[in-house]
Amino acid sequence: MKESLRSVLESWGLVAVRAKGASAGDRPKPGLTLSIRQPDGSILEVGELTQEGTDFLFRYVPSFVASGARPIRTFPSFNAEYRSDVLWPFFAVRLPSLKRPEIREIIEREGIDPDDVITLLCRLGKRTASNPFELHPMSKRQRASALALAEES
Image (cartoon, rainbow, N blue to C red; front, side, top):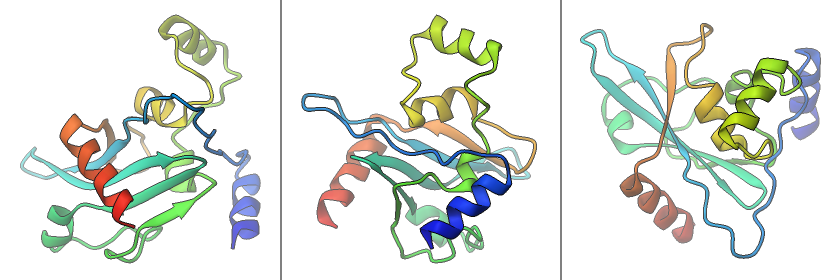
């Protein structure tokens, strides 16, 4: 499965995006909320993307499951916690090449760690023309809930 994912990424011209593990004493990364804007303008939270060590995790939030919406094809089960050491293409396509001069300038100006995939996604991949989903930083409450769920698993 992992090899086929790597093949797909490479065929799209993407390098596999991996999570860099945290060092001792590092603060936990804040994580992202995936959401979608409804026809009435309201925002419906879909799921949460977090990083634990060298793994990315995605899980749906209960309010999205209860909404009656269909799952995202990449994440077909509402009840699963998806874990991977490679960022799924659904998220990876949102990251521009870090070799682009204007992207390097943003990273340097804002002091972003180029290995911090979650922060890069939040800053550079919030919206995309290819799908209606948006990425937002998790609130402190959401992060606490995500950490509690991770400890239960």
